[in-house]
Image (cartoon, rainbow, N blue to C red; front, side, top):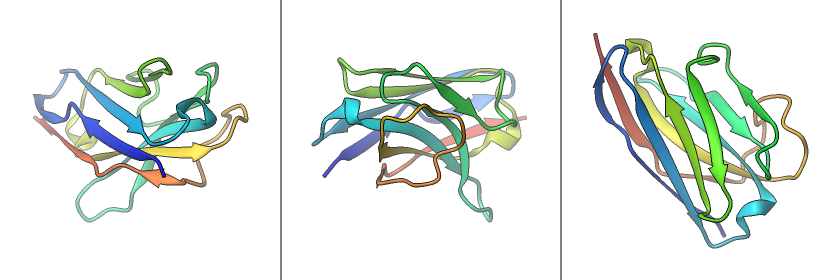
Length: 125
């Protein structure tokens, strides 16, 4: 059983930056591809970014490409999401996700084994 705990959310003005972190415990971190999803009020949860087990491949939603960067530190069992150039439409609860796989990431994570509890990101205009 893997536990995922997000942190780093908050309130920021449009154009600002935030870095989200997700600390994992209870499993072998390097066995998992990791991703970030988000859910805005009244909308479905959507994929944001994913990174392979060793960090060599990443994939982003078109809406965040060029602004967000996903990375991981297997020594610290942590995955990060650096968010720059934030827009009001980025406002959502952001969730960390893990899938037990070692394939190269070439598409959104379509199967998630574990979810975090979420962290709120609010971007004011």
